[in-house]
Length: 191
Image (cartoon, rainbow, N blue to C red):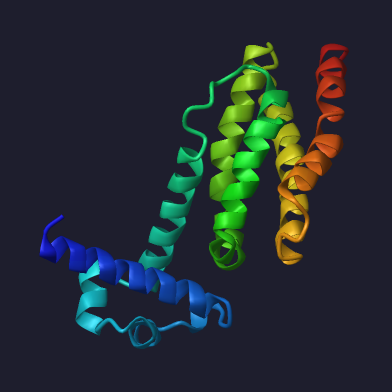
């Protein structure tokens, strides 16, 4: 990375961090470019060389987080068993990612849930299709049930400052979600 690229990258990181800090105390609509520049120590012309507006900056933060989240699962083998995605290995990666990026989750996750859900939905959808379940409405509603349930547990864990261990939270998720998977498949096959 040359000197210019490094400076550009460092400015971007400063603005990302400033946005996240400001989101802890302000609504996004209240954050101005001037506020961001003051907080990050970056001048307005530098801001506008990176972004058109504050929405672009927030989108960059969200995109980076979603990309990092998906990459955290690299190396795990894909499977056609939906329940595999709720095993210790997957849940540990997921919960560690949240804990390691707690500030980002607290400030930006509300805006990102739909995007993350859509990525995870595709994993789940593949599992249903492989098992011969092709009713798209059922797949959609059932997936949302699982994902919203997991999200509710994780949201409460985050609100509590991740005070419970990752192992404990993973066990709660498994106990709540896994019993429904075989029943759902059986119910579908029986009409």
